[in-house]
Image (cartoon, rainbow, N blue to C red; front, side, top):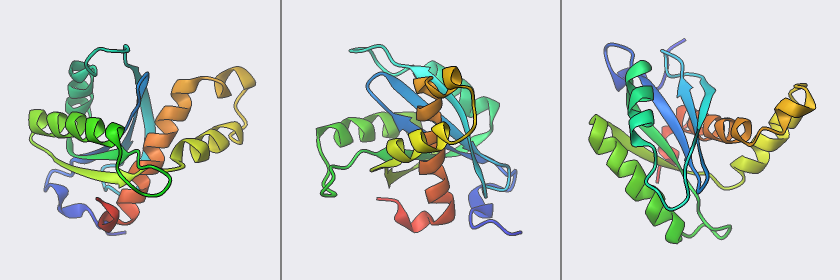
Length: 154
C-alpha cells in the first residue's frame, strides 16, 4: 500500500497530531508509512503557563517526527476565533523548534467523536473516564483526517 505521505522523508519519518487544550494536550502519531494514526499520550498543561514544549520535543525525537498536524478549534460557524490564534502561535513555535511543516486541520466535533469512541471501546469504566484518553483520541482523529486527505489543511 502506497501512502499519500511517503514523500515526507526518505527515512520514513512520522507525522504528529496535536490537540491543544487549555488543560491538556492530546498527541497522536502516524505509523512509519504515514497511513494510520494512533493515540499516543496526553500532556498536562498548567493554566497560565507555557505549553510543555520540552516534553513535546522529546516526543518529536522519540518518534522521528517531521510533520505536525494541529487541530484548529474553529467556531461552529467555521470561523477562526481568539483560541485559534493562540493554537496557531503554539503550533508555529513548535514547528520552528523542530524545523517541520505545520498543517492545521478543522477539529470541530473531534472531542465529541473521541469521547464516543472511547466509551464504545469496551474499556473498564475507570479507564474510559480518564480525560487524557479522550484528548489523545481527538488528536488521533485530527491526524487521521489529514493522513486521509492532506488537502483539508487550513
